[in-house]
Image 1 (cartoon, rainbow, N blue to C red):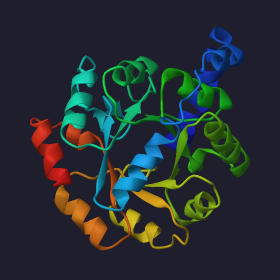
Image 2: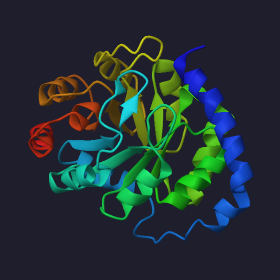
Image 3: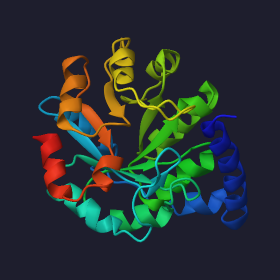
Length: 264
């Protein structure tokens, strides 16, 4: 069983238990109406910026299965998010999975209250319950990983997200998944450079897979991006101008400077 399938199995059980605590109908009742200005603001911001400059999605995560503990669990994520915003980050990505990433829904709620940037909820969505939950806790966008979803589930969760005013980032790992992603309505597709079987990273994965894209999508390179040199390499050899960067920034001793170096 791959790590992704292991996580999916855990997440299905986790959501089942959550439903016993808070029903889906209660979650839906607590989903506030979204203003026209806030609807789909994640994709709108990236679309505008893709026409003029590179965009960086700054990630907040304490640990991961591949890296282990990245930062201390007590680290102030709000302070990091504020530095992201002050130094030109376009959007924020927040890991809310507890078991594998030491995250929580409260992390997203607390950051949302202190910054104005659009927020991606990065978790393992395996049930429509989590889509409504994402809206309830204040996410502007959610992640759908095609490696753990069939087409019926992926399209259903996307449709619910759109009705709620949420954007959807479709994550792919290979050309086959890219073909599936292109058939979806979302303009956002993320290409993960990490092999989830052995955790190795190959930045050329983004380049290779992006070249097969036939539709007008915003392609986001994910995982293993640490320097402006790597960003420039990907941009030179592909259509990609948007990058999700997390681990290298979380470990940074001079966060503000490192963010500016990635962007400028």
